[in-house]
Length: 81
Image (cartoon, rainbow, N blue to C red; front, side):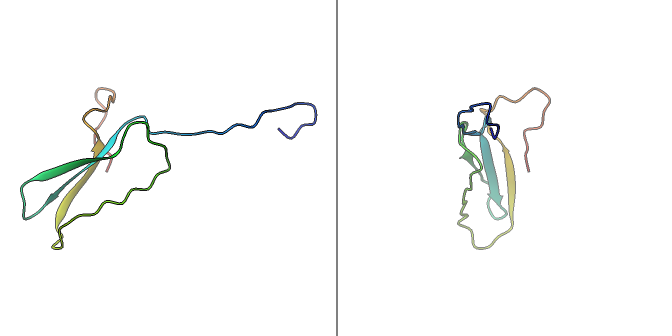
């Protein structure tokens, strides 16, 4: 691009999330698990999300995973963190 002999057009690289990512959480005092999709398929990144939990007591299980609708290869883990 810096060469005086060649003309190069300007370009922009945009990255996107090809697999939807969800969060599942369960509080210790409740047996009910809640799953929410936080990064839908096709969302641009880097992207920051804020997740607010309405439990002031704490003690919860948290799982970040690919959404059930994600088409991941057979045998690969669904869990991210």
